[in-house]
Image (cartoon, rainbow, N blue to C red; front, side):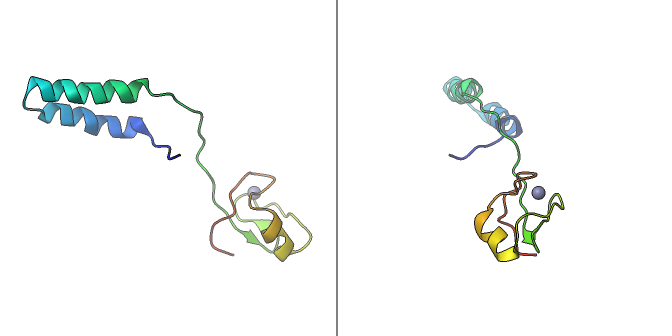
Length: 90
Ligand SMILES: [Zn+2]
């Protein structure tokens, strides 16, 4: 699944409606707009990306785990702040 921010794209889609030359083209773009506005929404939070550096989360600064290698291997997410540990190694 790929989530997008439709509110960000809607001005462009509405502008496309303004470029329509015929009534049929305007109706078609309006169908697209109606379909997008009626789409189911989900709660989504931006994902923080971090790294482990000597067992310390780059995002919240909390120390976690007994050894750096162990922490990197077993914690793909920081248990404290939830950062996804897929950034570059620190
Ligand atoms: Zn953290």
